[in-house]
Amino acid sequence: MCILTIAIMVGLFGLLVGEVPAGSTQTLPTAEVHEYQGERLSSVRDFHENSIHGPQNVDLGSYRLLITGLVNTSQNMTYQDVLEKFPQFRKVVKLYCVEGWKVTILWEGVRVSDLVASADSLPSAKYVIFYAEDGYSTSLPLEYLENREILLASRMNNLTLPAERGFPFQLVAEDKWGYKWIKWVKEIRLSDDADYRGYWESRGYSNDADLNKGYFG
Ligand SMILES: Nc1nc2c(c(=O)[nH]1)N[C@H]1C(S)=C(S)[C@@H](COP(=O)(O)O)O[C@H]1N2
Ligand SMILES: [Mo]
Image 1: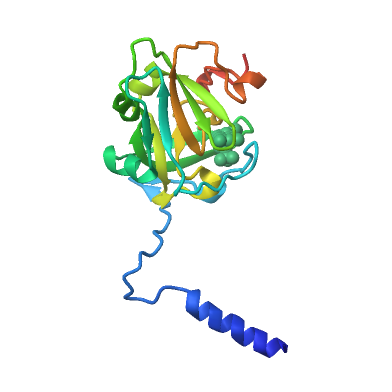
Image 2 (image 1 turned 120 degrees about the vertical axis):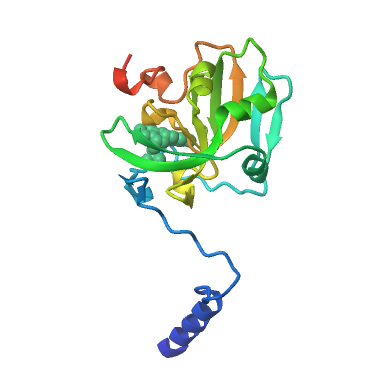
C-alpha cells in the first residue's frame, strides 16, 4: 500500500471517530477551571505522578465501593450509586507532597461522614482504613473524618478525575500530607485498630500526617 493510500485512510478514519460536530447532542468534555471565587487554581497536570504501581485503570462495570468492618449494614455501591445517593460538596483544598511540591485544586465529591453514616457504624469504630485498587492503604481517625467535612472526590477543577489522578475516587484529606490522599479508593473499612499503619505509614511516615507537624515520627 502506498503512503498516500494510508494517509487517506487515516484521514477518513479521523473523520469517522473524530471531533463532535457543533450542535450535536453528545456531551462535550467540560473544560478545566483555573480560578474559583477569585482564587488561582493549579492544573490537573501539575501533580507529580509517583504512585506505588503507576496509574490504575478502573473499569466502572465491575467497580464497587465497599463500606465494611464495624458497621450494622455494610454497603456495596456502584459509581453511579455514590454520585446519586449522597449530596455533592465542593471546596478548594491544597495537597502537599512530602517531596516538596503542592497543588491548589477545586475538589467536588461526597462527604466521607455521609458514606459512613449510610453503613451505620458501631460505637466501637474509631478508625477508618481506606483500601485502593493498587494495594495502597491508609487510615484516619473517624473523628477527623466526621468533624471536618472530608470529601471523597469524583471531580477536580470541574473535570471527572483522570485515571492517573485516582478515578473514580480520591480522598481529600485536608490538612494532612499527600500520602493520606488515597486514590482509586475501593473500600472504606470501619475499625477499632489504633495500630493500623498504611503503605507509607508502615515505612516510617507519621501516622498523624498533620501538615503542621512534619511527616516523620
Ligand atoms: N492508591 C494510591 N493513592 C495514593 C498514592 C499511591 O501511590 N497509591 N500516592 C499518594 C501520595 S504520596 C501523594 S503525594 C498523592 C498525590 O500523588 P500523585 O501526584 O501521584 O497523584 O496521592 C497519594 N495517594
Ligand atoms: Mo506524596
